[in-house]
Amino acid sequence: MATHWTLGCDAEDPPRLARFWALAPGYVVEEGFDGPDNTSLIDPDGRGPAIGFLRVPERKTSKNRMHIDIRVAGAPPWDPDERERLVRETADRLEAAGATRVREERYGPDLGHVVMLDPEGNEFCVA
Image (cartoon, rainbow, N blue to C red):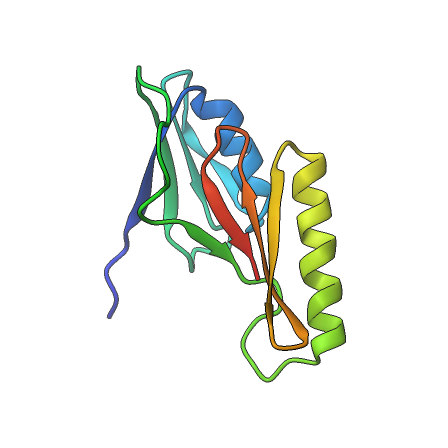
């Protein structure tokens, strides 16, 4: 049996960053853990890890050593055109919610992933 775990994230504004991150994987704010200094997200189906956001005084200053990949197309095999549509649609939705698109990476002729920054400048990919 796998151990339950939480991805801990530093944040300038935990509630704001948590609400952004709830969009990508379809998570919800964990009841009782939604304060100005810490906010937690959970998978409403209880399968994925929790994501916690904790207020810290310092700002982000360098590249993440670890980041989240949002895998919208599921597991292979994929239809490349459908996968590209899902990746672009998700990247557009997250950009409208405050993310910044950095670049696209290709795997041969197919779109591989879109590198983005969340509202506080943390790198992540939509794949």
